[in-house]
Length: 386
Ligand code: 13P
Ligand code: SF4
Image (spheres, rainbow, N blue to C red):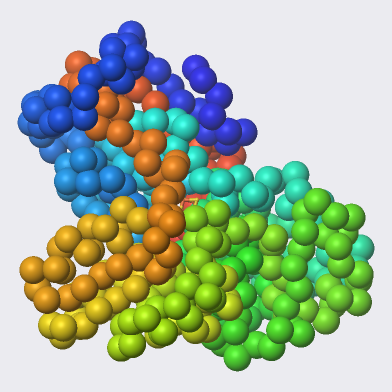
């Protein structure tokens, strides 16, 4: 049994075929093998694919979507095996939402998320202790329960299961980029303040969109004593933003939008809410990967878009919409690649599927039962609000 995180384990069942053997083969030789293994497994396996996956992988997905759509698909899936072409927190979420008789597989255990790694449970517990010392916690905030009055912890889906459990246990919930506003509204009906983990940009963009002012937000830096905040600053904030970010989306800058405006008049700028606020405020549309796709789908022929999100999705959209008379380019042509999403290769996919077809489960992602209980509560609250 190989340890993956404090809360999840990867189980190797039986003796698996060597992955090294697969990694020495060229991509295209995997296609027929993937198709054959899938045919053998039939409806026992469901392949879920995030939009940032590479073309050679995503074309095998039964279901594609953003984080929210994929979590719903996992919750409703009937297959025995859910094979997740995405990153670790997504596979953990699928395990949290699946039935006890289902198993979740991540073809490469190195497919993590640098943003999710920016909030560790020990750091979050220390942060909460500081809130307690500053008098931010209401009567019911310290343990389990739904009736917190002081501050509610809210986490982006892009976080470890232990962080989701932390939020669930303290009356909070999970959100994705497509329902962050609904989650903020839910939380503000129940508490004076929100702690938002781990993406400061999504938190800030959501708070500004709701009409909050910069002075009502504070950034918690987990590497500074008391997050770098005085008790007065903590008390003055309505939203406390964890200092985390997506290294892919943070690369987009306001000057990229300015350049498009200058060089491509009439072009629509559409960005993901993991981008900085300085970029989002200059964009025409801000939305999750699913919203980006839907916006371009709905646009009339002749429309052109500069898109601020991961390069595989942008390239796929450019190819798909060119014959329909719509032009799609990346907002920053230095190429914003999510290297961990990219780790799911056709070789890893073939390896996981062929082992499965031979009755061996490789790279199972399984969240510890004690973490599962509260993380599930936080996810169920999210699924109820949208
Ligand atoms: P969505 O697919 O939910 O828009 O999220 C993007 C992302 O960064 C996933 O890691
Ligand atoms: Fe994580 Fe950013 Fe990659 Fe999404 S795009 S998986 S947030 S590093």
